[in-house]
Image 1 (spheres, rainbow, N blue to C red):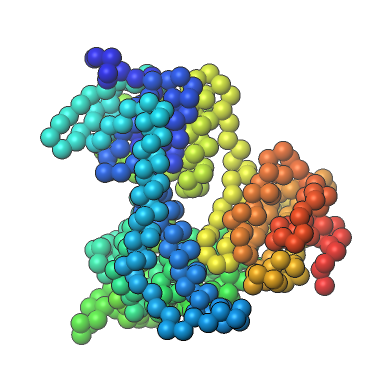
Image 2: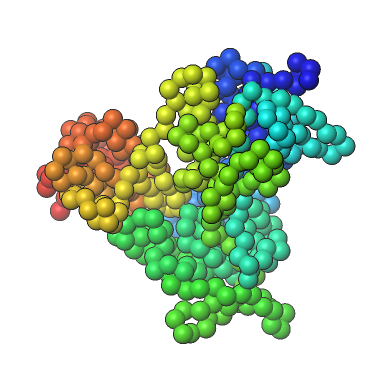
Length: 468
């Protein structure tokens, strides 16, 4: 092979895990290439996931405030209207800006970008298949960072028109009159909120007994109550069974106990999770194994069962989160370069970007009980926080969970305005093994929403100042 096709590091996939791995590799002096099968760099997160959905959430939050909260502030917005075309254009502008940013980072870090489907072809070799051309390159080290794809239900096949995934639900050209959302996790709640704010009748159907099921019951219950006030209709412990057409109308069928329920729908968003995307990677050609969920088997240093091949992000076990993939990217490349890369999986934050937002880090009270850990906890309601009162953010609370014997922080859960930003402080304290008292004795500016975290930490030992 020529020098132009030989690299120290080849990354397949350009999402948050892939492009971060490529940049870190270049920073550490590795001659690096990245391969992307789609037209744009950035992966699902940038193109059809995290970024466009947050743009829509922000725009619709402002629209909802204009229609429901502005008058109380003395703001008169008569004849309020919204253009879906302009809304989508704003979303696209945001995505384009970040696409260009990733493209620029590849250039400034002198990373060779290949367009096409990358697949493993023997030791150190990668085949790149693109329209009209076929190229082979070689990498001393290869990182698989191909991400994940939406899960399709066998009885509710995607057609891209009526039954859709999040890929289509971020790009409707008009507001559906009746939207059914299957799944009450992050994606379902976020996109359900977007279209409910714009006027859709939204029914959220969840098989489990609670929405946001990875959080403690008190958080899930408050979220359900608040989202109901915003127009979301929840059908819990309900199993979707299929879809049919009757008299020109689409009917989604479901079961709750021994009862059959029908929903007249214009659109059905299936948001029941994601699965590792390994199609066409050629794992079998180099003997790479996967588990029963299709995830690539790796060791503590992200090495697969094939020499010189590593995997990170959604294709390996762990939460399917962009920031988890980014951290693994850095740790994996640093290990390749002989450094001590490491990811602390106990402090990966989880966020649902609704309004109010929901965030957490560490374990829940329920998990502590399952693990037999004696705990103490403190809670503080935003209703007692001055900044929250001044900025219409009184819904929600902060809960701090600590080890009963040592006071070490075990977990924090927040439901409230700006929870995605507030959780970072808890992550920081937990990273160094901090205690609830460490947060309680950390000075927080007044007035800020973050004071609620301090108060909840103080409440762990019954010392909250502003609790009623």
